Image 1 (cartoon, rainbow, N blue to C red):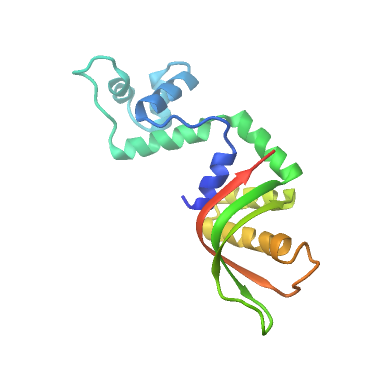
Image 2 (tube, rainbow, N blue to C red):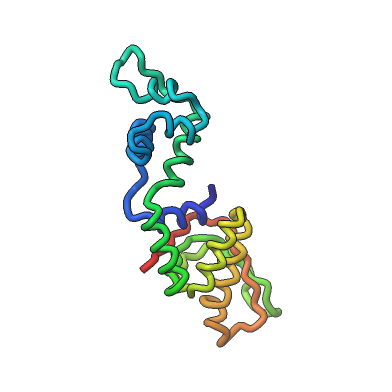
Length: 185
């Protein structure tokens, strides 16, 4: 998962996701009414395996393996704060968001301009259309590269061309993202 995807995920939550595997298993059990059978079906393992993971008896307890830890994490992320995520997405699509980043920006512009790429800190309000485009790309399974292109186009228009008031024909290259944060609402 790239910096942009991580930033979007953080912006969609109001509470941190449980960090330990035990806490994640407790969350899955609570969200499935305490049923180890339903948790096992979600994770693709046997009910007995889930029971071994969550038992209080020290001799009978077995920790999940690396593949199962990944499946547990994915299941928790898919179920963590769904109403909050829907509300924050709707808000971002309606009102826009503030994008904070530190990345390398370069330009393709007319002769005489300084087009050498350099690292910049940028904080910019972006409209809801950009949020809709980013979420649609994420829902379609777009990777970090496509999301970077969407944000480069939006930042080029909003920040570098000042919403079309200057630097017509300037094309922005956005790469080496050190961090990406999104502030919604």
